[in-house]
Length: 194
Length: 110
Image (cartoon, rainbow over all chains, first blue to last red; front, side):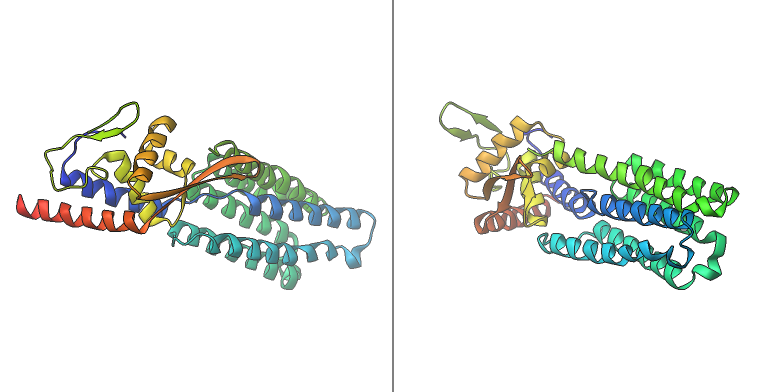
């Protein structure tokens, strides 16, 4: 963009383009990905360890940190969005998709785990893949898009793995597929501060 | 057309005489349009939106500030310097008048 003479029509066009672009642009610092990814990794690793130690009756207890994690994310983003006085449609989409994903995870995991059976963790992985891929498109992050696609593939591959290793798969995927891209997103945001 | 001299900033008259010369500049207009949309914008957002160089953006922000159209707050965020801008009431009025003038120009020249 240069400082040159331009016509009134070009001026109006510039104004509307900038305003439209500003309303559709959305940036995230990766906090939700890092936090949810870490909580998921810890919970699923905890489940794996409990199953290996044959504590079958309490193997799902580590997942009780997930509703707490969801609450933390909710309040964090409410405070953050409260400081921004612009309605951003992309931001709203991101919030809705993340909320829907979290809600479905909780319902499936806590109330329908028996019905899901062997498919529970692949289902969780599919939800993670959709969240990651969609976020990648919304925030224009290639790493999240690729991660989402890979997690989707791993979700179906996990049907060929023994069920007792599913929590371990979820833990590793959470760390590599969600936390690492989140850290990268957070770092790239800080590196650009002027 | 704007030239920066040693101590003053001179604005040459343009062919669109009734248009605010401070706003009738691509980069300054883009910055002000962004500030009209967001209550606050930081330097990095402006740089991403306009693809202009940091030096050029700094100069234009100074010109807008001298005209009283924006406020600049420099702070530290997570140990990194952060420059954030917001539009003033004078800037909002100037922008609204500028848009009105544009519409009049376009209407007259049709």
